[in-house]
Image 1 (tube, one colour):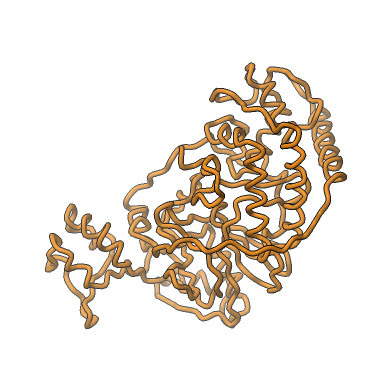
Image 2 (spheres, rainbow, N blue to C red):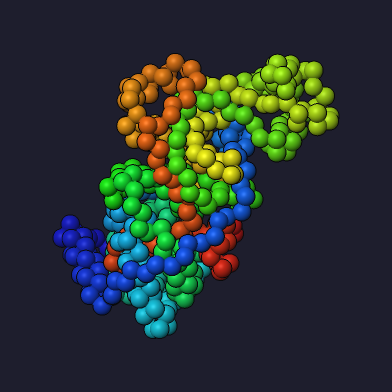
Amino acid sequence: MKHSVKDGKTAKALDRRLFLRGAAGLGLAALSVPAATSAAFAQAVGLNDVLSSGRRGNWSDTFDARGTGGAKAIATNQPIMSPQTLNYISAAINQYNMIVANGGWPTVPGNERLRLGMKSQVVPILRQRLMISGDLPEGIGSSTSFDTYVDAAVKRFQARHGLPADGVMGDMTYKALNVSADVRLGQLNTNLQRLGSLANVDQTRFVMVNIPAAQIEAIENGRVVQRHTAVVGKIDRQTPILTSKIHEVILNPYWTAPKSIIRKDIIPLMRKDPQYLTKNKIRLYNGQGQEVPPETVDWNTEDAVKLMFRQDPGKINAMASTKINFHNAHAVYMHDTPQKGTFNNLMRFDSSGCIRVQNIRDLDVWLLKNTNGWSRDSIEETIKSGQNNPIQLADPVPLYFVYISAWSTGDGIPQFRDDIYKMDGASELAIGTAI
């Protein structure tokens, strides 16, 4: 089926009219309720960061076909932690109450890898499902063709659920489509409560890390000025929920291995490859600060746990160019990584609790902009020198690690993310654990 430019404009116009009709019937109510309790204790960044350096290979999982189309339709500079978001969640709850009252949406059967240009008996059901959730304008028909209208609707749905907006019906898209409306309604209500006490942040500048979205927002004067893709803690090494202030940026940091990582990962690796520490520029020090040659350690025992394992600054350092420090009881921090490919993974839950930050140098510049002597150029020159350089912020920046798996960025634009740590109370929301 061929479509002209005029057809595309008509589809967009219909989409806008649908949003306006939906918004007219929704009330916006700002609610204030207690925030969620904190997450379980999380360990500091682990040896996996070292193993992920460019010299040791890149292990990536394969998900739905990659793409970026469709994300612009729901892009916004509205912070998640804002009264506007709280109001929009309330509106989304009204919308989903109506959807549930009307019987919800159909299950999209099978797992056929549908995409633009294909025909299937599943497509009419897919159309109905997307119309009910507001991703496809009403009255587009019941054709079996996966046409440009369905393609645009699938991309919009994917973008709202944190999936690659490529229009391809892969496993994750099917699973997200087939979470029932009443379960999504429950997820919205749960997250309304979590966001209640976080929405009225009065700081001019702050940073928010949303764990289930694996995303960071830098907020200034009520607007998101930077967004960063992140990698957060594994299911068994969770990133904690916390509130703190960023007080230090270290350029060219050292990395010190936690005892748990020494015991669990490094000692077994040294038994297999006695040159592992040397290859990765990790030095050993005793309690007196004296360097200990690795060949003098009995790696068949746990004597090594008594030593300090410290990796030199440099390109293969587990934290690469930057470490961002903030006081907390969990020994976690934010940092760069030599393994940039991990930011391309869909399920970015791969650290030992710390936060890896994509394009971290942009965040460095923003954090240090009120600290004398630090500009983009001076930061880049320091990183290039390879010399360790701790910098105290002139104005510590408030920091929030939050667990918000459902929110809304506008009328008719509810967003959902995988409940990776299973905090939302419904097993079907932990979609990624089944992939």
